[in-house]
Length: 395
Image (tube, helix red, strand yellow):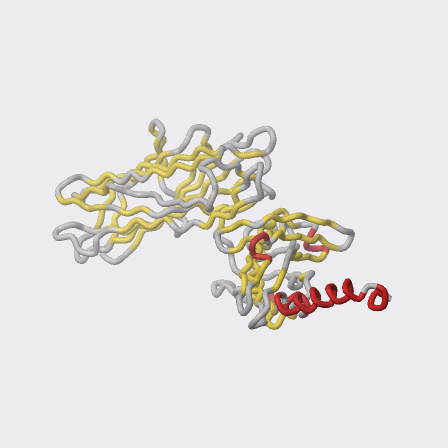
Protein backbone atom coordinates (compact mmCIF):
# COMPACT_ATOMS: atom_id res chain seq x y z
CA UNK A 1 0.00 0.00 0.00
CA UNK A 2 2.83 2.42 0.91
CA UNK A 3 4.77 1.40 -2.20
CA UNK A 4 1.77 2.16 -4.39
CA UNK A 5 0.61 5.44 -2.78
CA UNK A 6 3.88 6.87 -1.42
CA UNK A 7 6.83 5.35 -3.30
CA UNK A 8 9.23 8.05 -2.10
CA UNK A 9 8.41 7.39 1.59
CA UNK A 10 8.85 3.64 1.11
CA UNK A 11 12.19 4.17 -0.61
CA UNK A 12 13.43 6.35 2.26
CA UNK A 13 12.34 3.80 4.90
CA UNK A 14 14.03 0.96 3.02
CA UNK A 15 17.22 2.98 2.61
CA UNK A 16 17.34 3.77 6.32
CA UNK A 17 16.86 0.08 7.20
CA UNK A 18 19.70 -0.97 4.88
CA UNK A 19 21.91 1.79 6.23
CA UNK A 20 21.28 0.68 9.85
CA UNK A 21 22.27 -2.86 8.95
CA UNK A 22 25.60 -1.62 7.59
CA UNK A 23 26.34 0.77 10.45
CA UNK A 24 25.02 -1.40 13.29
CA UNK A 25 25.35 -5.00 12.17
CA UNK A 26 25.38 -6.20 15.78
CA UNK A 27 21.86 -4.85 16.31
CA UNK A 28 20.42 -7.57 14.11
CA UNK A 29 22.63 -10.35 15.42
CA UNK A 30 21.68 -12.50 18.38
CA UNK A 31 23.52 -11.68 21.62
CA UNK A 32 26.17 -14.28 22.38
CA UNK A 33 25.42 -16.70 25.19
CA UNK A 34 27.85 -16.34 28.09
CA UNK A 35 29.93 -19.20 29.48
CA UNK A 36 30.31 -19.48 33.23
CA UNK A 37 32.95 -21.18 35.34
CA UNK A 38 31.92 -21.41 38.98
CA UNK A 39 33.50 -22.87 42.11
CA UNK A 40 32.01 -22.91 45.58
CA UNK A 41 33.88 -23.54 48.80
CA UNK A 42 31.85 -24.61 51.84
CA UNK A 43 33.68 -24.22 55.15
CA UNK A 44 32.13 -25.61 58.32
CA UNK A 45 32.95 -23.82 61.55
CA UNK A 46 33.51 -26.86 63.73
CA UNK A 47 33.81 -24.94 66.99
CA UNK A 48 30.49 -23.27 67.58
CA UNK A 49 26.97 -23.90 66.41
CA UNK A 50 27.40 -25.50 63.00
CA UNK A 51 27.75 -22.32 60.98
CA UNK A 52 28.91 -22.56 57.37
CA UNK A 53 30.76 -20.07 55.15
CA UNK A 54 30.10 -20.29 51.40
CA UNK A 55 32.67 -18.69 49.11
CA UNK A 56 31.75 -18.68 45.42
CA UNK A 57 34.09 -17.64 42.60
CA UNK A 58 32.38 -17.05 39.27
CA UNK A 59 33.89 -16.15 35.91
CA UNK A 60 31.52 -15.03 33.13
CA UNK A 61 33.07 -15.18 29.66
CA UNK A 62 31.93 -13.68 26.38
CA UNK A 63 32.76 -16.32 23.76
CA UNK A 64 32.13 -14.03 20.80
CA UNK A 65 35.11 -12.60 18.90
CA UNK A 66 33.13 -9.70 17.46
CA UNK A 67 30.09 -8.88 19.61
CA UNK A 68 29.83 -7.44 23.10
CA UNK A 69 27.48 -8.96 25.62
CA UNK A 70 25.07 -7.32 28.05
CA UNK A 71 24.35 -8.67 31.54
CA UNK A 72 22.36 -5.95 33.29
CA UNK A 73 21.51 -8.22 36.22
CA UNK A 74 22.85 -11.34 37.85
CA UNK A 75 20.87 -13.31 40.43
CA UNK A 76 22.11 -16.01 42.76
CA UNK A 77 19.67 -18.11 44.76
CA UNK A 78 19.86 -20.48 47.72
CA UNK A 79 17.30 -23.14 48.69
CA UNK A 80 14.96 -22.32 51.57
CA UNK A 81 16.69 -24.58 54.13
CA UNK A 82 19.90 -22.65 53.58
CA UNK A 83 18.41 -19.22 52.96
CA UNK A 84 16.56 -18.97 56.24
CA UNK A 85 19.87 -19.32 58.08
CA UNK A 86 21.89 -16.87 55.95
CA UNK A 87 22.74 -13.80 58.03
CA UNK A 88 25.30 -12.28 55.69
CA UNK A 89 25.76 -12.04 51.93
CA UNK A 90 28.27 -9.99 49.97
CA UNK A 91 29.03 -9.68 46.25
CA UNK A 92 32.33 -8.32 44.98
CA UNK A 93 34.38 -7.88 41.84
CA UNK A 94 38.00 -7.42 42.78
CA UNK A 95 38.10 -4.71 45.45
CA UNK A 96 34.67 -3.35 44.46
CA UNK A 97 31.58 -4.22 46.50
CA UNK A 98 28.47 -4.61 44.33
CA UNK A 99 24.94 -3.52 45.23
CA UNK A 100 22.64 -6.38 46.21
CA UNK A 101 18.83 -6.53 46.40
CA UNK A 102 17.35 -9.41 48.41
CA UNK A 103 14.14 -11.07 47.22
CA UNK A 104 12.52 -13.76 49.37
CA UNK A 105 9.96 -16.38 48.41
CA UNK A 106 8.47 -19.36 50.22
CA UNK A 107 11.06 -21.75 48.76
CA UNK A 108 14.19 -19.69 48.26
CA UNK A 109 16.00 -16.42 48.74
CA UNK A 110 17.51 -14.64 45.74
CA UNK A 111 20.20 -11.98 45.70
CA UNK A 112 20.04 -9.70 42.66
CA UNK A 113 23.39 -8.13 41.92
CA UNK A 114 23.66 -4.83 40.09
CA UNK A 115 26.71 -5.27 37.89
CA UNK A 116 26.94 -1.60 36.93
CA UNK A 117 29.79 -1.03 34.47
CA UNK A 118 30.53 -4.75 34.51
CA UNK A 119 27.24 -5.46 32.74
CA UNK A 120 28.88 -4.82 29.35
CA UNK A 121 31.40 -7.57 28.55
CA UNK A 122 33.49 -6.81 25.44
CA UNK A 123 34.18 -9.44 22.82
CA UNK A 124 36.50 -12.25 23.97
CA UNK A 125 36.58 -10.81 27.50
CA UNK A 126 35.33 -11.91 30.91
CA UNK A 127 34.41 -10.60 34.37
CA UNK A 128 35.11 -12.20 37.74
CA UNK A 129 32.59 -12.13 40.56
CA UNK A 130 32.86 -13.32 44.14
CA UNK A 131 30.08 -14.16 46.56
CA UNK A 132 30.39 -14.79 50.29
CA UNK A 133 27.50 -16.08 52.38
CA UNK A 134 27.40 -17.00 56.06
CA UNK A 135 24.70 -19.43 57.19
CA UNK A 136 24.32 -19.56 60.95
CA UNK A 137 23.39 -22.81 62.75
CA UNK A 138 23.02 -24.63 59.45
CA UNK A 139 24.55 -27.94 60.54
CA UNK A 140 22.98 -29.68 63.54
CA UNK A 141 24.07 -32.41 65.95
CA UNK A 142 27.78 -31.71 65.88
CA UNK A 143 30.03 -34.14 67.71
CA UNK A 144 33.72 -33.64 68.59
CA UNK A 145 35.04 -36.06 65.95
CA UNK A 146 32.12 -36.87 63.65
CA UNK A 147 28.99 -35.21 62.41
CA UNK A 148 26.07 -36.15 60.23
CA UNK A 149 24.99 -33.40 57.90
CA UNK A 150 24.13 -32.49 54.35
CA UNK A 151 26.03 -29.59 52.86
CA UNK A 152 23.54 -27.67 50.67
CA UNK A 153 23.78 -27.95 46.92
CA UNK A 154 25.67 -25.49 44.81
CA UNK A 155 23.38 -22.44 44.49
CA UNK A 156 21.39 -21.91 41.32
CA UNK A 157 22.16 -19.01 38.99
CA UNK A 158 19.15 -17.26 37.50
CA UNK A 159 20.76 -16.31 34.20
CA UNK A 160 20.67 -17.79 30.71
CA UNK A 161 24.14 -19.28 30.76
CA UNK A 162 25.90 -22.57 30.28
CA UNK A 163 27.84 -23.51 33.42
CA UNK A 164 30.64 -25.49 31.84
CA UNK A 165 32.70 -26.01 34.99
CA UNK A 166 30.90 -25.95 38.34
CA UNK A 167 32.59 -27.60 41.31
CA UNK A 168 31.97 -27.66 45.05
CA UNK A 169 35.08 -27.70 47.20
CA UNK A 170 34.84 -28.90 50.79
CA UNK A 171 38.35 -28.44 52.22
CA UNK A 172 39.66 -31.23 54.43
CA UNK A 173 41.35 -30.64 57.74
CA UNK A 174 44.18 -33.20 57.98
CA UNK A 175 44.06 -33.01 61.77
CA UNK A 176 40.54 -34.39 61.86
CA UNK A 177 39.88 -38.07 61.28
CA UNK A 178 36.85 -40.23 60.57
CA UNK A 179 35.00 -37.65 58.51
CA UNK A 180 33.07 -38.98 55.52
CA UNK A 181 34.84 -37.85 52.35
CA UNK A 182 31.76 -36.01 51.10
CA UNK A 183 31.77 -33.86 54.25
CA UNK A 184 35.38 -32.73 54.42
CA UNK A 185 35.65 -29.66 56.63
CA UNK A 186 38.13 -27.18 57.99
CA UNK A 187 38.12 -24.77 60.90
CA UNK A 188 37.58 -21.09 60.33
CA UNK A 189 40.24 -18.58 61.35
CA UNK A 190 38.23 -15.52 60.46
CA UNK A 191 36.70 -12.78 62.55
CA UNK A 192 33.16 -11.64 61.71
CA UNK A 193 32.83 -7.89 62.27
CA UNK A 194 29.40 -6.34 61.86
CA UNK A 195 28.66 -2.71 61.04
CA UNK A 196 25.22 -1.39 61.92
CA UNK A 197 24.73 0.52 58.69
CA UNK A 198 26.24 -1.86 56.11
CA UNK A 199 26.59 -5.54 55.42
CA UNK A 200 29.10 -7.37 57.61
CA UNK A 201 32.73 -7.47 56.64
CA UNK A 202 35.03 -10.42 57.15
CA UNK A 203 38.48 -9.70 58.50
CA UNK A 204 41.14 -12.38 58.22
CA UNK A 205 43.91 -12.11 60.78
CA UNK A 206 47.16 -14.01 61.18
CA UNK A 207 48.91 -15.43 64.24
CA UNK A 208 50.95 -13.52 66.78
CA UNK A 209 54.55 -14.21 65.77
CA UNK A 210 57.40 -12.81 67.83
CA UNK A 211 60.59 -13.10 65.77
CA UNK A 212 64.22 -12.48 66.61
CA UNK A 213 67.35 -12.25 64.46
CA UNK A 214 68.72 -15.67 63.59
CA UNK A 215 72.18 -14.93 64.98
CA UNK A 216 73.12 -12.39 67.63
CA UNK A 217 76.58 -12.88 69.18
CA UNK A 218 76.45 -13.72 72.89
CA UNK A 219 72.68 -13.40 73.11
CA UNK A 220 70.29 -16.19 74.04
CA UNK A 221 67.46 -16.25 71.48
CA UNK A 222 63.80 -16.76 72.30
CA UNK A 223 60.89 -17.44 69.98
CA UNK A 224 57.41 -16.72 71.32
CA UNK A 225 54.04 -17.47 69.79
CA UNK A 226 50.80 -16.16 71.30
CA UNK A 227 47.28 -16.89 70.13
CA UNK A 228 44.28 -15.24 71.76
CA UNK A 229 40.75 -16.62 71.47
CA UNK A 230 37.62 -14.71 72.49
CA UNK A 231 34.52 -16.67 73.44
CA UNK A 232 31.47 -14.39 73.39
CA UNK A 233 28.29 -15.43 75.18
CA UNK A 234 24.78 -13.99 75.04
CA UNK A 235 24.65 -13.76 78.84
CA UNK A 236 26.96 -10.77 78.55
CA UNK A 237 30.18 -12.52 79.55
CA UNK A 238 33.43 -12.74 77.63
CA UNK A 239 35.83 -15.65 78.08
CA UNK A 240 39.45 -15.09 77.03
CA UNK A 241 41.92 -17.90 76.36
CA UNK A 242 45.57 -17.19 75.53
CA UNK A 243 47.95 -19.87 74.33
CA UNK A 244 51.62 -18.87 74.75
CA UNK A 245 54.60 -20.87 73.52
CA UNK A 246 58.22 -19.96 74.33
CA UNK A 247 60.99 -21.72 72.39
CA UNK A 248 64.67 -21.64 73.34
CA UNK A 249 66.48 -21.14 70.03
CA UNK A 250 69.92 -20.86 71.61
CA UNK A 251 72.81 -23.26 71.08
CA UNK A 252 74.08 -24.24 74.52
CA UNK A 253 72.38 -22.35 77.35
CA UNK A 254 69.32 -22.90 79.50
CA UNK A 255 66.81 -20.04 79.21
CA UNK A 256 65.37 -18.98 82.58
CA UNK A 257 62.32 -16.79 83.17
CA UNK A 258 62.40 -15.48 86.73
CA UNK A 259 58.79 -14.38 86.56
CA UNK A 260 56.03 -13.80 84.03
CA UNK A 261 53.71 -10.83 84.55
CA UNK A 262 50.38 -10.87 82.76
CA UNK A 263 48.02 -7.92 82.47
CA UNK A 264 44.32 -8.51 83.11
CA UNK A 265 41.60 -5.88 82.63
CA UNK A 266 39.20 -4.68 85.30
CA UNK A 267 36.25 -6.96 85.87
CA UNK A 268 38.22 -10.13 85.20
CA UNK A 269 37.55 -13.18 87.30
CA UNK A 270 38.25 -16.91 87.47
CA UNK A 271 41.81 -16.44 86.24
CA UNK A 272 43.57 -19.79 85.66
CA UNK A 273 47.00 -20.68 84.31
CA UNK A 274 48.42 -24.08 83.48
CA UNK A 275 51.03 -25.74 81.32
CA UNK A 276 49.99 -27.65 78.24
CA UNK A 277 50.47 -30.85 80.26
CA UNK A 278 47.83 -29.70 82.70
CA UNK A 279 50.06 -28.63 85.61
CA UNK A 280 48.47 -25.67 87.36
CA UNK A 281 50.67 -22.61 87.90
CA UNK A 282 50.69 -20.45 90.98
CA UNK A 283 48.79 -17.24 90.30
CA UNK A 284 49.30 -14.08 92.36
CA UNK A 285 47.43 -10.84 91.68
CA UNK A 286 49.52 -7.70 92.15
CA UNK A 287 47.79 -4.51 91.03
CA UNK A 288 46.69 -4.88 87.43
CA UNK A 289 48.98 -7.84 86.79
CA UNK A 290 49.00 -11.56 87.35
CA UNK A 291 52.36 -12.97 88.47
CA UNK A 292 53.12 -16.54 87.42
CA UNK A 293 55.79 -18.50 89.29
CA UNK A 294 58.00 -20.43 90.06
CA UNK A 295 60.81 -19.64 87.58
CA UNK A 296 60.63 -21.41 84.26
CA UNK A 297 63.67 -23.06 82.70
CA UNK A 298 63.78 -24.05 79.02
CA UNK A 299 66.59 -26.23 77.69
CA UNK A 300 68.18 -25.52 74.33
CA UNK A 301 65.86 -26.49 71.47
CA UNK A 302 62.90 -27.09 73.79
CA UNK A 303 59.74 -25.09 74.31
CA UNK A 304 57.44 -24.18 77.16
CA UNK A 305 53.73 -23.64 76.62
CA UNK A 306 51.28 -21.88 78.92
CA UNK A 307 47.51 -21.59 78.65
CA UNK A 308 45.88 -18.62 80.39
CA UNK A 309 42.13 -18.26 80.77
CA UNK A 310 39.87 -15.75 82.47
CA UNK A 311 36.33 -14.38 82.31
CA UNK A 312 35.05 -10.84 81.93
CA UNK A 313 31.50 -10.00 82.91
CA UNK A 314 28.93 -7.54 81.58
CA UNK A 315 30.74 -6.86 78.33
CA UNK A 316 27.60 -6.45 76.21
CA UNK A 317 25.65 -3.29 75.66
CA UNK A 318 21.92 -3.45 76.48
CA UNK A 319 21.02 -3.77 72.79
CA UNK A 320 23.14 -6.90 72.53
CA UNK A 321 26.31 -5.48 71.04
CA UNK A 322 29.69 -5.97 72.61
CA UNK A 323 31.78 -2.97 73.55
CA UNK A 324 35.30 -4.35 73.60
CA UNK A 325 38.32 -2.33 74.61
CA UNK A 326 40.95 -4.98 75.23
CA UNK A 327 44.55 -4.48 76.29
CA UNK A 328 47.06 -7.26 75.85
CA UNK A 329 50.12 -6.87 78.06
CA UNK A 330 52.74 -9.45 78.99
CA UNK A 331 56.04 -8.99 80.80
CA UNK A 332 58.79 -11.56 81.02
CA UNK A 333 61.78 -10.93 83.30
CA UNK A 334 64.84 -13.02 82.52
CA UNK A 335 68.39 -13.31 83.77
CA UNK A 336 69.52 -13.37 80.14
CA UNK A 337 70.58 -9.82 79.14
CA UNK A 338 68.64 -8.65 76.12
CA UNK A 339 65.93 -6.17 75.32
CA UNK A 340 63.01 -6.49 72.97
CA UNK A 341 61.61 -3.29 71.57
CA UNK A 342 60.14 -1.70 68.44
CA UNK A 343 57.21 -4.05 68.07
CA UNK A 344 54.59 -3.51 65.37
CA UNK A 345 51.06 -4.88 65.46
CA UNK A 346 49.63 -5.29 61.98
CA UNK A 347 45.85 -5.75 61.87
CA UNK A 348 44.40 -4.68 58.54
CA UNK A 349 40.64 -3.98 58.39
CA UNK A 350 38.68 -4.58 55.18
CA UNK A 351 38.92 -2.08 52.36
CA UNK A 352 36.75 0.99 52.95
CA UNK A 353 36.18 0.29 56.65
CA UNK A 354 36.77 2.54 59.62
CA UNK A 355 38.59 1.82 62.85
CA UNK A 356 35.36 1.50 64.82
CA UNK A 357 33.44 -1.75 64.78
CA UNK A 358 30.40 -3.30 66.36
CA UNK A 359 30.83 -6.86 67.57
CA UNK A 360 27.64 -8.89 67.23
CA UNK A 361 27.39 -12.36 68.72
CA UNK A 362 24.92 -14.67 66.99
CA UNK A 363 25.41 -17.83 69.06
CA UNK A 364 25.92 -18.93 72.61
CA UNK A 365 29.52 -19.95 72.15
CA UNK A 366 31.31 -18.60 69.09
CA UNK A 367 35.06 -18.63 68.70
CA UNK A 368 36.80 -15.50 67.46
CA UNK A 369 40.54 -15.63 66.91
CA UNK A 370 42.24 -12.25 67.25
CA UNK A 371 45.86 -12.20 66.20
CA UNK A 372 48.54 -9.99 64.71
CA UNK A 373 52.23 -9.82 63.86
CA UNK A 374 54.99 -8.34 66.03
CA UNK A 375 58.67 -7.95 65.19
CA UNK A 376 61.50 -7.11 67.60
CA UNK A 377 65.04 -5.80 67.71
CA UNK A 378 67.46 -7.44 70.15
CA UNK A 379 70.17 -5.48 71.95
CA UNK A 380 73.04 -6.73 74.06
CA UNK A 381 73.75 -5.99 77.72
CA UNK A 382 70.29 -4.74 78.77
CA UNK A 383 67.84 -6.58 81.00
CA UNK A 384 64.99 -8.09 79.04
CA UNK A 385 61.49 -6.66 79.43
CA UNK A 386 58.91 -8.01 77.03
CA UNK A 387 55.76 -5.91 76.82
CA UNK A 388 53.65 -6.31 73.68
CA UNK A 389 50.41 -4.35 73.90
CA UNK A 390 47.41 -5.32 71.82
CA UNK A 391 44.56 -2.85 71.58
CA UNK A 392 41.28 -3.71 69.88
CA UNK A 393 38.50 -1.13 69.90
CA UNK A 394 35.02 -2.23 68.96
CA UNK A 395 32.64 0.67 69.40
